[in-house]
Image (cartoon, rainbow, N blue to C red; front, top):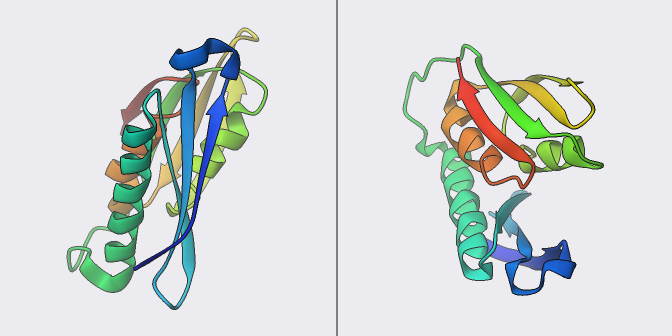
Length: 142
């Protein structure tokens, strides 16, 4: 695998050293590229999350997934704060997951619920990545 690009963005910079950091890593295997995201208050931890996801995805893409894995759909239910760009961040976070369905609804203007159908092979990774999104309050799986 080859690291193609590494970007760091400080979200909500007005919070100084308590600001949230987002790291976007683009990786290539020579046949294609994929991007992964890490989010946290520590740039090293956020970088590690993005790098770990990049390598995990690359290995799965290369066929390191368990043989005969079940291909039914898992539903991830995400409770989150409804902010400008929240849906876009969810979509960007899941850019390397096999998403087969997505619904997003606001409940009282400040909170929202998203239901995301993903391939079972991507469910654990997608759940972990969603848990790192700033607006997410909780993720359940069914």
